Image (tube, rainbow, N blue to C red; front, side, top):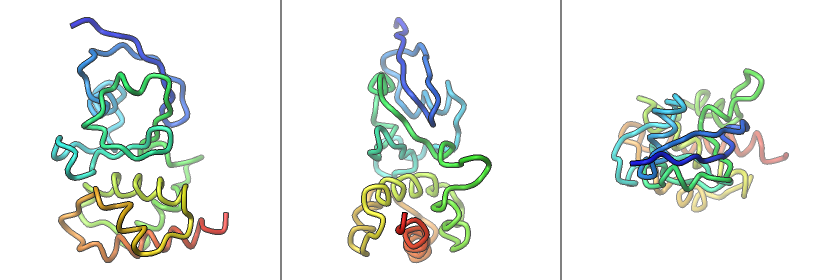
Length: 158
């Protein structure tokens, strides 16, 4: 299969890469770009561990062809850190122990980022809806909710 060239911005950097048309965005991010914070788990769009933002919208990168990234802006968990400082959402997850094994955490954080970008002061139902596609097998979600609420209080005034 012949490779095709695509151009996009990932974590603020203009990128050009040649890939096979059947490669998923998840495979390109992890294998070609070596950004391994985005996790591969179910590979069927059921768990949300591979969530990234495309033009600000959360997507399961295991279900999106990399070719669809052409001309778009992608944000992964690695792109949240600015000048060696964690994003307030990342800090809130650490401070509130919103993770245990940490496998679902990048996807949870990216879904939270999309939520707080569009609604800095979400209520409980809006939080539930925003993370509905992200499964955690460790925490029972209480600490995740606390983390999201804490992050909201930190960035909600901005």
